[in-house]
Image (cartoon, rainbow, N blue to C red; front, side):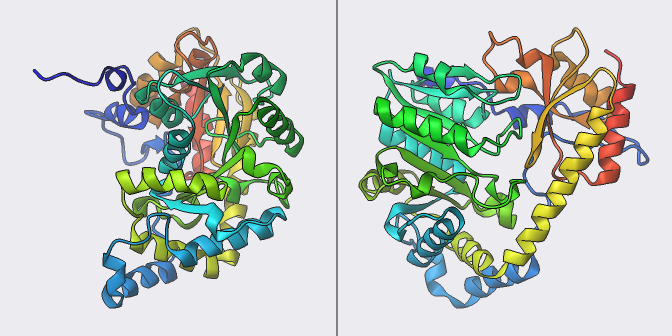
Length: 391
């Protein structure tokens, strides 16, 4: 048999796909259907107007079926630059924006410009598992920075972890998997640390559209020194329900864009034209609709907090955007409990072990609950099933 890449072999299997296999052979009563809180991807299609824009382009725009610019269509890059300048009070130019095949690819591209095998990157834990997977595949060490009880990482602890091979600190806010929203002051401290030590600060803001705070969540785009340090990531998937079209964005210096272009040209050549057309239409036409979507997610967050805070034995650590991070009351590991939750409670949730190193004792104690696709009644039923589950 031909050889396999040892770094790829050592990378864990996709967690969501593993969790879906727990459903094999399990049936659910009509009056007690599965409650799926394992994944945050929207389950509904985009609004009709956006779908019509994509359909019309598919029928009438020949260029929609051809390769586009590697860094993305100019009109979408300009719209992203305009929106981020408006939202954050900074000055972002189209030349500082790349459009990618989803936010995961934006992360991969950012890392490709920064690090190589043998380097290391600091990831707060619990971490977003796809970030860890990509680092493992590249032979880049993920240095786990354990979050405090408030689910926020400590810049002072991060400072002690930076060595000669450290290339970046990665933050996700609102966080996946914990939902925690990182205060602006905390992001300022991380930016100062990264700049002082000559490394990058990558901020993944996939869920920025569902932040509970009003106004800009940070002021990093207003800083004159940001180009040397800041790389910002964004996804259109959650905001406009475009998961199947794979459209994301990366914001960085124009100098870094030349390197990003090399990566994107090699792995995708160009992002889906129809997806970019849909994203642009959404940005220009769905501001009010998106505001309503945000309010619905915030109401589901409030319902989740209320339901879980009253659940005996369970402890809610944080909640925001699409996620809640909860501690369970049982002696067993969440890795063992999760398949049983499917069979015995009709709940599909990801165990905390999928978001932490094997040596981290917090992983077995926790679950991530992705509540964004569950309405208020479903959230009440979720709490009732957790309350009735016995390890």
